[in-house]
Image (cartoon, rainbow over all chains, first blue to last red; front, side, top):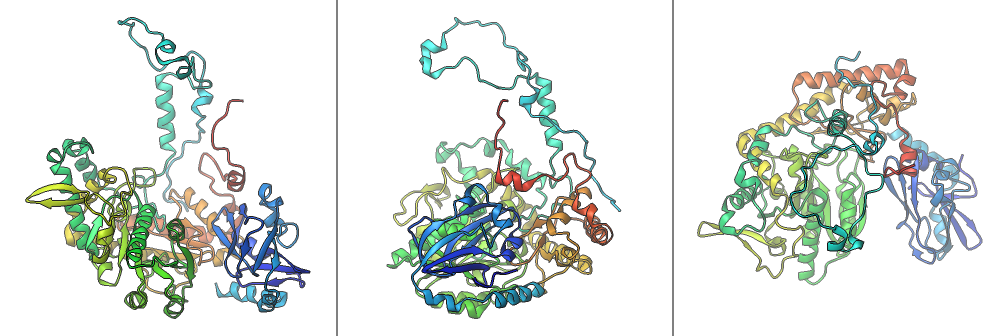
Length: 130
Length: 492
């Protein structure tokens, strides 16, 4: 379910490192909990983001939710696909529907994130808690 | 089995535009008895137009029927229980309306001189006094037009006070159970927002709060009882933690329906709060009228209150504009005065004992529902229920039926749905607030409906997933409506 080449947060974001770039998205679990996504608000290219701070927001038929930056750095690209087709985020959250690409300013932050296996366990535990 | 259902006439009403046929008129004017004037000459051609393109043309009776039919498609508290959690859809007593229509109050104009408006000013003065008695605060402004406006006003007051002390600070702490308007308010007032997690009992976790408070924190925005319908039992400790760091406590008073006559925010450490007259004090809302969100403050914030402030000197009421530290006006004129009249009527009709009874009945009704449907739906937070209870669709979700589906099915039973998917900290939230208005008979019908739906889900989830079945329009495509909204009629 969760690609092993990505790192995950407890807030349900993922990041995949490609050289000095981190590709960031939200997880399958996140999109499932949000329900049908109707709007994605992405940051401006060129802005800097800090790990743990609001990076983007995602609006579903249920609610508007913040997406937190899993890593710090500069936003170098945002996924233009999502403006016209927010539903892609429901359909392919770990593939085509990535959110932003961040030029990592502190690559060591990655080590603090969850592995796919740990995230899978975390989501399972969170589910049974409710 | 459906015991209560409101008959829905199975007829869809077209738009007025679609009923139009050229040349129809809803009026007949008498012959002109003054010289005709060419409007284009008098006003200038750019200010006139020959006709409004696409404007609907219908007869009087067609217009009347159109709007009357539309009015029957509505659901209102006057038709039955309206258990929309967090919204306090209580009955709006008719005496409020009668009082609001007293000629001198109904026709008061904001430009009337003070000498001619002593009556309405006295109404506002009296309401201020009673709201202070109810909240235990020191001063109140009636200007804000509704709850979120009150929040914004309150946070601006905090900012003004902290600025006067030399540092407005940067952050506002908000529990994860808060109303969505709280973070919006903080952001609008120029603060960044930091989330505080709730504990397993559904209350603010005091230790994580204490860790989060530093010299950058301006205030905590807390709702009490919170959106889980749970009283924040550590509220005085929470206030101490904030005050020790020079930060303020803002209370979202949306849930005052659970406190009036029993507990006063001013006594448990709150510095600023708003009230929703349209919730707690029975003025109409939800399309039925404007809101009103008075903001009450403790002494140190009084100099910053919006101006003008009402005052009484030698028996005469007047407006005081000479308030150099005031944040200024937050609303044209003096607020939604019609709501002030209604709220005062409600308070006076009840009296202190009556208000306390209303509070106790609101809590009793919520607990009655909690007790009766607790075997059928999961209640994630077990702390005592105040005026509303929040269930989870956990058990039903295993069969593929979610909170939104249960809500749709409730419509078939003749009830307005509860609040769906809020608060967000409960998965698949079903937030039920009956208010004190409801009789045991009405509550029993509602409980029966929820139990019956729980059984339907076990037996025939598909049927529930396709609900509502008894309405004119069955399930609408909410996702497409949100993704590709059509916000106005356009000619073909």
